[in-house]
Structures are given as structure tokens and as C-alpha cells.
Amino acid sequence: MANLATREAYGKVLVELGKENKNIVVLDADLSKSTKTADFAKAFPERFFNVGIAEADLIGTAAGLSTCGKIPFASTFAMFAAGRAFEQIRNSVCYPKLNVKIAATHAGLTVGEDGASHQSVEDIAIMRSIPNMTVICPADDVETMAAVKAASEYYGPVYIRLGRSSVPTINDRPEYKFEIGKAVLLKEGKDVSIFATGIMVSEALKAAEELQKEGIDAEVINIHTIKPIDEEAVVNSVKKTKAAVTCEEHNIIGGLGSAVCEVLSEKCPAVVKRVGIKDTFGESGKPAELLKKYGLTKDEIIKAAKEAVAAK
Amino acid sequence: MNRDINKLKEIAVEVRKNIIKMLTESQSGHPGGSLSAVEILTSLYFSEMKVDPNNPKWEDRDRFILSKGHAAPVLYAVLAEKGFFDKSELMTLRKIDSNLQGHPSIKNTPGVDMSTGSLGQGLSVANGMALAGKLDNKDYRVYILLGDGELEEGQVWEAAMTAAHYKLDNVTAFVDFNGLQIDGPCTQVMNVTPIADKFRAFGWNVIEIDGHDYNQIFDAIDKAKSTKGMPTMIVAKTVKGKGVSFMENQVGWHGTAPSKEQCEQALQELGGAING
Image (cartoon, rainbow over all chains, first blue to last red):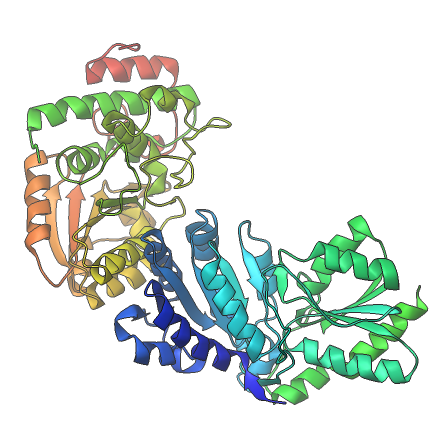
């Protein structure tokens, strides 16, 4: 199984897309080596714009380029894209529904040693609440490449959430297909539905494997598009299992957990256990240490799944 | 293009009258900063910019961004006068289901090149348009109007650096330097002066003019067009509320609509009847 950070895959696919489509332009705010847009900058220097440490300007410049037919990918860390530039994204991109792609890297706790100031635990919530915005959180390198390509072919604002640390490749199979807004069923099951996004998808699969040994047949669904969420997939799965667990490297408030609860509470009420960051800030540490300390592991998913099953 | 100043003055009167009528009808909106920008916008739309009212999204058109989006009435009045939409629509300003939102919206109004209203965001967008023009070897120009109070927003200075860094000589910006913002004179609320020196220090070609004098406006635009390798900032000294005696230089007329009686008086001063 390969191990690659989603940001690395982003850097690679941008170069590929840049070759195919001359309208793709890339912007960064002095983090191109970290966000991996430096690969594109090297290949297509005339189509790369570094605006310096100025995230508001980053988004506005991308907006302007998009009004003239360009397909801008603007990158910085999730903290500064969704946080610092929220209102530029809201008013200069989403309100006019411009064709701007925001590929935000270093999301969540797995930024690691930089600590809480750089660990975005609220970006999904913020981005998801803006009308016209699409929010995608790929699970691995394969999905990242597919998602970035799909975003480039879709007209409208897209927020793509990427990570700093390596994650196992889980989608490297011939039948894999990516479609914005279409959840991916990874394992069928009848006892509990595990909905996961981003780096938590591989953990969910590991959890399901162990649950199986203990006689709990879990269904695992990868919700790579958090908005628009695949309501049908969520409802159909929970109609069958009557219990749900959500897993995300994000605050349990406002992210995937909330999105799934919103769907289920209206269309198929069931117990939902949310695995995620429990409304707290992170801290410095190694990614694996942080995931363990903040409850983002297969063990937590197993515990939550058992609770959800018991509460049926 | 035609620079018949007498004709422009006639258009300006019409635009000012429409601003007053629209705001009286809506009983909401911003007269002061709309009236101060009339000469700048009429110069651009009637004597300078390549635009086609029948093809508002024409790829090769010159662009205009009203970064001080609260001056939407002057933009709408000018666009209607230019023929982008019917003048009768002006009276729907700020009303439910109207194409004329309180602040400019690209999705709603033909001729609006960018949605604005939240201050400080326009110059970055102008830079993006200018970069696209350079990439595509197009010769369109990007014009933008900022408020002086708006210069207090940090993003303006981020964008000012970007425009100079990328040598965006296809960007021509105006500051509507009317000296007043909501809470009082700019120099008292948060001193934005010296504006010209600040932009010069940021690497811009800066020209200071009287923003109500057509000859000075055209002269500045011509200098901007012939300046290579750097963006141009035209600091246009203006009078907030220009043309209506009781509104001129009055902070209180930033965001207050006139009553029917005040409307009548304003229209008389401007040289028209209320239904004229």
C-alpha cells in the first residue's frame, strides 16, 4: 500500500492538468513549497502567481482571474484560507459564484508540531455554510487527483481540504470512480453505518475489519464530498443499519458529523456517534500522537460503533 | 472616443437626478458617495471604456469595479444611461425581486463586472482581471474606484503591493477622495492621508486631480494609459454629496435617503423637475 500526503498528490495533478488546460492558473501565498504548488510554478511559471503572505488578496486575485475565463487554484494552509480569507471567499467568490478552486492544505491536527495555531479544526464547518460552495475532503492520493480534476471540470467555487501527512492509498483499484457529491461505498454491512471523510476513511476501514471479528457487520462509506452531501447514500445505508458513526479530522461541531446528523434527523432518525475533535484546540506533537490523544483512531471508531449498535 | 465635455455635463446632471430619485423611492441607500463619483464614472463609461451594452460580457471589454460598492446608485444610473438596462428599473433599487441590489451584484445586473460591497476587496479582483489580460495578450484595461475611507482596509494594501509587483500597467485606480466616512472625517476616524505618498511608496504612478473636472480626469486617464510597468492611482479630490447644496460635505448624508421634500429641492438645484 502506497503512502502519500494528499498535498503531494495535489501538486502532481496540478502539473498534469496544467498541460491539458491552458486556462488553469495557480496562486499561492508564500507557501508553495508546502502546498506543493511549487511543482506547477516550475512547470508553468507564467501561470503561477505568488501574492506573498496575503490571503485576502490571494482569494480576490483568483476571483478576478476567474471572471476572465481562467480556472484559478488558490492554495495556502486551511487555517489561512478558510479562516483569514473567509469573507473574501464568501463575498468575492461564492456570492458571485465564480469559478475559483481553493485547495487548502495542512488541514486538521496532522499539521503536527506547528501546533494549534496552524491546526484548522473548523474549516469544513465554515466553508460548508457558505451558499454556492462545494466542499471536498479526499481520502488519499488517488482520490485527491480525481477530485482536483473533477473540480477543474466543474463550474463554481470548490473548497478542497488536503493534509500534510502521508496517508495510506485505499482507492487504487480499477473500478474506482470519483464524482462530486457521490459517496463511495467501501464495505457493505448491516449493523452500523460508518461515514468517514479524509484521512479517517482508512481508519474506518481498519475499524470495520476488527468489528467484523467481533461479530459487528459495519458498512463503510467514504463521504469525500461533504457538500453537497450524498443524502441518498446516507439515508439508504442507515435505513438498513439503523445506526451511524461519523469520523473526521475536524471539530465534531459543524463538519461531517453535523452534515450527516442534518440529513438523518430529517429523513431517517437514528443514533449517530461522532468521532472527531471534541470542540477543543490541538497542540504540538507528532501527527500519530495527536490523532491518538484527540480520539481520531480506529479504536475510537470501534467504541463509537459499539455504542451506536447498543443504542438501537 | 468622444470627449464632449458639455455633453458629459448634461449626462452628469441626468445621473445625479436619477441618484436622488432612486434613493427617494427606495428610502434607503448612499447618496453622498454616489454624488461625489459622478464625473469619474461618466468619464469612464461615456468617453473612455470599451463596453457594449448589448454584450455586457464581451471578452475584450474594459472592466470597471466599484470597490466602494455602497455607491451602487451612481453605477446603476450610469449603466442605465448607457443602455445596459431600462431606466425604469432604477426605481426598483433595493426593493424585493429587483435586479438592482443594495450593493452591486454580478449575477443580477447587466454591466456589473464584479460583486462588491464589503469594502477593501475590489483591487485584488482588478489585479486578477489585469493578470488574465496580460496572460491572454489582450489590451483591455481594468478601472476601479475605491473610497478614501475604504483605504483603511488592509487588503487594499496587499493588493497595492501585488499590482506594483506584477507591473500591472493595465490597472487604473481612482480614489474618491471626498474626505468623509460614516463616523466622521477620515482624518479623525482613521487618518488615511497622505494617500498619494502612500501609493507612491507602494510603487504606483500617482496623479492628483480635481475629481469633478473632466479635463483633469481625461488628462489623468491618458497619463495612466501611457505609463508602462506600473499601475496608476488617480487620487481624485471630490466633494461628498456634490451638486446638492444641503448634502455637500455633510457626514450625515453618507447613508441617508432624502425625503420627498428634500428630493424636490435637490432636483430643482440640479436643474430638473421631480418628474423630469
